[in-house]
Each structure stands twice: as structure tokens, then as C-alpha cells.
Image (cartoon, rainbow, N blue to C red; front, side, top):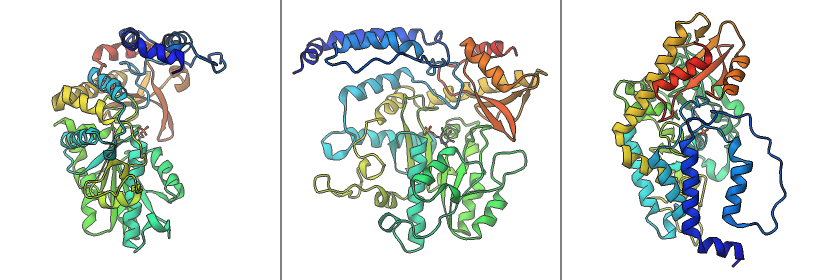
Length: 447
Ligand SMILES: *Cc1c(COP(=O)(O)O)cnc(C)c1O
């Protein structure tokens, strides 16, 4: 064995203890770490010839890279939609790497059974009675749902797209789709230009269901319903869309990347009314479940079509069978057991724990929205429907506001454009955030 590797093996317990101490110190400083950093340029060094073992690697990381890492796991990183990592999720993630399972049934491990339990728990949490699998993020979850929809449309036309490739254009209808839908259509060979933007209700990001119905009258399609848009967390009327199924042929995919967590709160669950009737559903987990990157779940009621798309048969791996292995369900073949952090988090905090996190985040967003609305220096661009505040300064430029805020280290918010207006979003989805953090963000903004 390479001598430095043999030394690390001999010292493994002590080295892991040092790693734990280091990680604990980082976590203890998370609240004070700048929410975001411009990115340390870092002078590059050449590849070491022999290396100096784990302890030296950790010292080099601590000196050269860690100071430039943001506090994105902390309570005032409100950019994009960013979760953190709960204690249980972090422990589950450490153990995922410790046990280092390939999450496939053929490898002789109960890892896949644990993944199935975690998917079933998520189904119970969300009120969805469909099988599913873990993937790396909502982009991949959307890609899988759309791939199954592509196969379903092929079946209507009497072709297997999986075997033959696309034989004709596919229309994809959506009101305010996330950018990952276009990316998925590109990867799937459907084409970004096949995305048909359907008109919205006035002053909303939700699709006009009558306009959608007119598009559906033109022939079979894939419909992407949006359950939580990025700018204003608007929800399509999924119940009304699902009811069109009695008259038109379409695959209903619901992108509920973070909006799906409305299901854990009796106050907000009705926003998702009808989503259990979807053909496929996407929910991100590294956002509001607060598990570490990367993790999402995809659900579908047509696992038969899913296996057709993703099956990975070979003499040494075996055929999919009745209860298909995840490698026959997702783009990856060898897979990290990313179900374990989610399993730990659900086992540790359960339904009530997530209800508390989600409702606390929503009330933080509402509090910030109320304060901004009361100040003449700011304008709210949409009501705070869930966990995102979308607003714009009346006396200064968005870029200046955000630069000053990022430089202060107090908080990180991200820009957008809503209805043609340059705007700012504050998205609350971290388990640590409290109303004291809203105070600090508002103080830093001068609200
Ligand atoms: C975040 C998000 C995605 C993409 O998620 P990734 O985890 O970044 O792949 C898709 N749809 C919506 C609505 C999102 O908010």
C-alpha cells in the first residue's frame, strides 16, 4: 500500500476525530460566516506528486479554500431556494459515505429497501400514492417525469420512442415553467422550442386554464403544471387541470420542487389540491427537506413506462422484474444512497418537525413582506403566497442594493425580473432561520 495511505488507515479513528472537530468548528461559526462571498480567487498549485496524507490535505483545504466558502447552509442565505442540512440529515450523509453502498439491489445490500421506505415516507408526507426513486435534484426529477411522458405520447402514436427515437414533434404546454424544463427538453431530444408558453391569469404566474384547454384541443401533449413558481410562488390550479383529463389526452407532470412542501401544513396544503392525480411529480429535497446536496425525489404512476425508458439490462445485472431496481428507473446506474440523509431527517423529525420548519419559514417571509410593504422605499411586486418575497427598491438600483448587502455579509438575496421589472427575491427555506434573522436582514436593507 502507498505509505501515506497506509499511515492514514492506521490512524483512521484519530483522523476522523480531527475531521469531526474541524466540522464542528465550521458549524459553530456558521451564523457568523458571511452569507455569501465573492469567491476567493485562490492561487492554483500543481498536482502533488506524492501527497502528504489526510492531515496535510485538511490543513491545505482549511488554509486555501474554506475561508472562501459561503454560509449558504446558514439562516440568512435567502438566494435562489436554498436549504441547509439538519443535524439528522448531516449525520445520515456522513454515514452514507461511511457505508458507501451502491444503491442497487443486485449488489447484495438492504440499501434499496431503505430507499423504498424513504420514498414511501415521502409519499405519506406529501399525500402521494405513487412509487418513486431518488435522483440528484429537481432538474433530473423533471427530466425523468418528462421522459416517461415522452414514452406515453409515443405509445399513443403506436411507437416506442425509447426504441425508435422521436418520430414526430411533441408539444409541451406550461404557464411559467422553471428553466430546467427547457434543459430537460433539450436532453430528451424533444427540443426547447417545443415548449408552448400558455397565457397566464392576469397579474399571476398561474396558467389560464381555459387557454390551456384550447391548446389541448389541438391534440395530445405533455402538460407541466407548476406548483410554486420561483418569483412569486404561484400555483397552477392543478385540480382544474387534472379534471381536463376526462376530455383531452395529456401527460400531467407537476413541478413541485419546493412548493410540494405546502402539503405538510394544513393551512397551505390546498394550494396543491389535485396533484395526487398527476402522472409524474417532482419534489426537490436539498431545498425544503434540508438535506445536503444533492437530493430530490421523482414519483410516477407509470413505472412500467419508466422502466422502458431507463432499463439497464445486462447479463450480469439481470432483468428489471416486478419491483424494479432503481438503476432501471433513473439516469444513474451506480447510485449514491442519497435516501439515507432523507431517511434520517424523516425518522428524527417526522411530519410535525417539517410542518414547524415550513410554517416558520412562511411566517418569516410574511413578516418581511409586511415590513417592506410599509416602507415607501420598497414595493412588493406580488403578495407573499408562501416562502418567497418578491420586491423592488423605489429609490435605488437592484444591483446596488444586492452588492451592498452581499458585501455586508449579513445576508444573500438574488435578483430576478418579474413582469419586466428588475426585482429582488428573498426565499426562506432554511431550518435555522427565525424572525431574529428577518430583523437582521431588514436592518441590513435599512427597512
Ligand atoms: C430549484 C427548482 C428546480 C431545479 O432544481 P435543481 O435542484 O436545481 O435541479 C426545478 N423547478 C423548480 C420549480 C425549482 O424551484
